[in-house]
Length: 109
Image 1: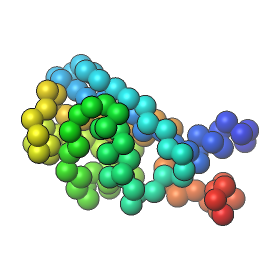
Image 2: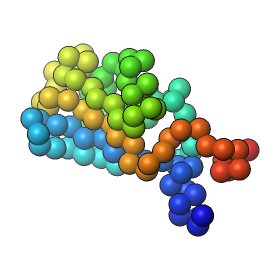
Image 3: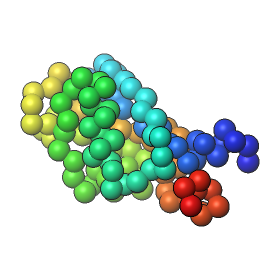
Image 4: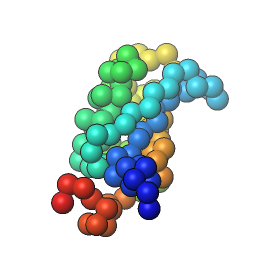
């Protein structure tokens, strides 16, 4: 495995996009500077929404579960406290895997 593949596994990217109907209205690629930690998903979401200049939605356990197990989380309009100009926000893992890596792939150990 070359260094680029190793970095993609250790430092995943999250593609965030706001959708209005079937069209993408905004998108943003968030690169983690560390291995993915599901306990920090809200922190990642705050960074993403700040960069996209949109309100931060309420995050539920189902969002975390779906993102970790299915590589996608969908935040509907009703999950935002403030009014938004899109139907939903999608967070998608664009690097392929965020499952815990074997110890020999982890640079922090």
